[in-house]
Length: 189
Image (cartoon, rainbow, N blue to C red):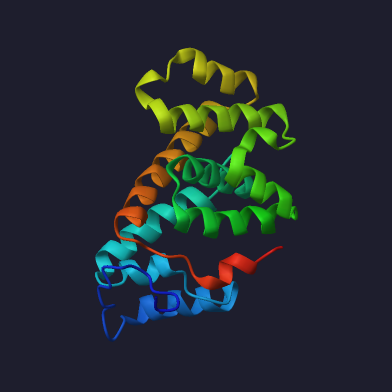
C-alpha cells in the first residue's frame, strides 16, 4: 500500500491546485502537520472539495452549544458503529488531543458506554447511536431526553447534523477505501 494513499480510487488531484486551495492545504499542513487524506481525496474536483470543507467547517468548527470535543465524540461514536477506519483513526486522535485523555479516545472507539461521562454527553451519544442504527425510530421522547440533559433546540439540530454528516462521510470513506494519514495513529497518546 502506498503511504498516505487517500483513496483506492486514486483520482488525481487537480494540478496545479488553485491558489485558494493551495493556501488551505498549506494552513492544514501548518496547523496539523499534514494535509488530511480526505481533503486530498476530494481535490480531484475543487467544487466537491469546497462543498465538503464548507459543511465540515460549519459543523465542526463554527459556533455551537456543543463543544469541539463533543462534536468529535459524536464523530467517533457514529464511526464506531459504522466501523469507518478513516474516521475512527482521525477523529479518535482529535478526541485524545482535545480531551487530553488517550483512554477516552479508545473507549469511544471500542464502546462509548465504558467511558465515565457526564449525563449530558451520555444522553447525546445515546441519541446519535440510535440515530445511526435506526433513525426512523427517533421519536419526541428521544429529543426530550436531550432537552432534559440541558441541550437547546439548536443543540439538538447540531447533534443531528454532525451525526448525519458522519454517517454520510463514513459510507463514502469505506466505499472508496479511503485511508487515514499514518500520522494520526501516534497523535496524543
